[in-house]
Image (cartoon, rainbow, N blue to C red; front, side, top):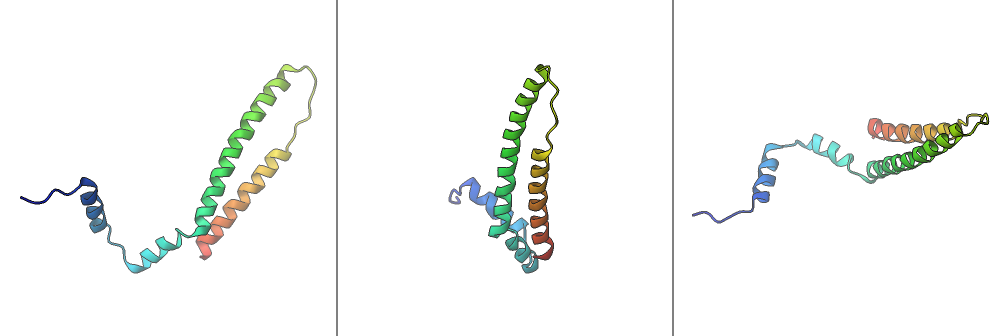
Length: 100
């Protein structure tokens, strides 16, 4: 009778055998797990959370402005700032992936 092995060990062992990666592919995968992509991922998460918060604030503000009878001028500055921040993040990460 064979000794009992935990199921997780068998699964990870079979996955390691199923995925045989050559050295060139392994080095490309290791390059993508360095600090810059991790930091860029965190930056995208933070920008996403901030955009949800800002969208909620703007939704409430727009509701209040619609209930008001006065005429208000539109503000494009928050949209412009958000677009620039996203563009800088995308350009930085794309440049790293293409050049690096």
